[in-house]
Amino acid sequence: MSSEPILTARGITKAFPGTLALQNVDFDVMPGAVNVLIGENGAGKSTLMKILAGVERPTLGTLELNGETVTFSSVRDAAAKGIGIVFQELNLCANMSVTENIFLGRDITRAGIHIDRKAQRDRAAELLARLEHDIDPDSLVGDLMIGEQQIVEIAKALCEDAQVLIMDEPTSALSASEVEVLFKVIGELKRSGVAIIYISHRLEELMRIGDYFTVLRDGYLEVSAPRAEASIPWIIRNMLGADEVVARRPPARAAGEVVLTAEHLKLPRRGAGYAVDDVSVSFRAGEITAIYGLLGAGRTELFESLYGLRSHAEGTVRIGDRNLSGHSVADRMAAGLLLVPEDRQRDGLVQNLSVGSNLGLASLRRFTRFFSLSRSAEAPLLQEAIDRLHIKTASADAPITSLSGGNQQKVVIGKALLTEPRVLLLDEPSRGIDIGAKAEVFNTMRELADRGLAIVYTTSDLKETHAVADRILVMAYGKVTADLVAAEATDEALVRASTLKIEHSNQGEAR
Image 1 (spheres, rainbow, N blue to C red):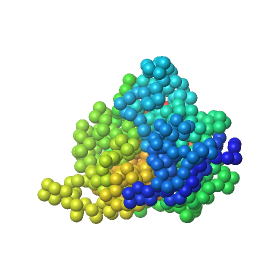
Image 2: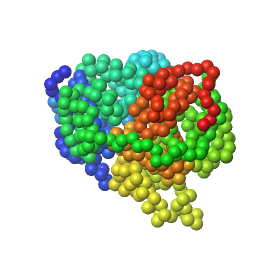
Image 3: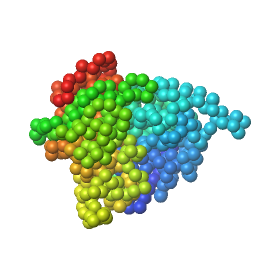
Image 4: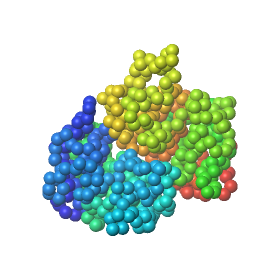
């Protein structure tokens, strides 16, 4: 590896209305190496990456690429100069095919006139094969699961042949096997001299592949160090100013009565088979249940079937004694069932509304007085939600787009809590959230369970499976393959169950 940086940022400051996102930050990017950037949500990581990739321009400061001062007027301008990016929030067009998304704005043409669609499709198939994925290049992106969309976003970046490749949370929706493939590709890129800037909240992942480590804290550069000087305690200490993250707490009381029941739930898959295959399960008040499984196991589809988003799902869903089968999402919400979706950008937020408007969106009836919205009734509850979840925002009136990804995730969770649900379904609640924010979210989940809510969350991370769960369900191939008491569940048992294919389900009856 060269001892000279390929890209340098000096004195970078970025001001947004009401927020100073970055203050006098220096950052060196070494070629042929993985340059890790770490920090809590709101520390300024994504803002710095957007400046390096041409999405934003710094208020103050300079950039140098290969020793020459540069400015970027757009993402395309930065890409033309050799800087590519995999965005944390997927930057894809749902109504276009995988191939069209990969080559959007950089079509392969014949004689510079006609688009060579066959060449583009073949190249897209080649990139997907490199990532060891069998996604059809002709599939509409909107029909793909979020993990598959993340693969498309990575393939799109690999198409650029960049000198510097920025990866902002590239593994947040990937399974363990897909992460291994990505790391293999990163190794190939390093050997060819590409500089990787890598952002992730998975600390073990960072220690495994990182060569240089830079920590941001509250918009400032906290520390930079080579791999030999870094460790997980070092990262936590510099990120949070403490060595410990909040420890797991036992439940304050035993689980209560069954609140949500699903019996013989089936969701037909496109083509053949079932995405959810004859699942019978129940959830109790005051109990936190983790649903662990790999990408494609059927976890999200189970949640969407319970919530009424999949109208062709078969089987029975009850809250208490009330049968909600065939009822709308609105009816299920009114009965006390709420879903926090995995894709906060597409399904959880309205991008042109403020933080407060997004928080109150599902609870408008609580704030309505004589057919009009009462701001005086709404304001204290919105502020309480902001304070409880430690949402970093200038005010409830700030644009939702001014928040970091993790703080946006907390707004989606806060929106659900304001509806006062009986059952809260959280689909990958820690996706894109740093360890500090993750601890806050898990603490909130424990507090809600202690107050009597039934909490159910999905995860593909073994450590998160144990974080707050009282009970762990494992899904594989659309079936529940294990139902375990969390205190007795081993990683080995969970991994084995997550790969188990059973032709005839022997799941227990609903608990």
